[in-house]
Image (cartoon, rainbow, N blue to C red):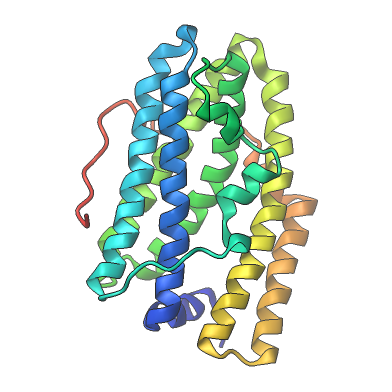
Length: 261
């Protein structure tokens, strides 16, 4: 029976597919670390109190990248180049979602609206990350090699999502509510499209590595399109709601050290 658990188990059991999976994940986390570090450095004067939280967000992402690289090293594997069509972070940036890298590479302070854009983008992408890690945690929390990594990253992603909710609500109460809702909707609709395209590309690469039959590959592609159809119809709404999280001030302390580096 084809299930999410059996699919991931197949990917994890093969060195080449595991290497590609970890390389893609490590690259995305490293990119997120760089983006957050630059945003923290460019925060406007009126929001300097937010800089330590953004810095911690970036430090967490860097830590996750090191964890995925360490998991490869443990199996004697080296990272592989990430195929452009599987680069989730860069495809979102190319579609104009979040803050442009050209802006982040300059040494000009960001505006409050830029911070609202950053938090809205993060709220959407962290929703995806939190859900994905929750799924991996469900299936592999007790895995001898992956368990600790999955639980640590999952907890961090939940913290990131809570932080985005809390900070966006603060900005909404300060009068940015309409801009936040507009930006969240734009980000969510773009994210589900990019996630579909990246998922199809990743599964195509995995299928070639693992020698999947045409019916199996077709069934997986159908499932990805079905998920996109649901998200395009109603599922995107879960990415734009805001509520005060149970985890308050989730990024208020120092980043935890990676145990896998």
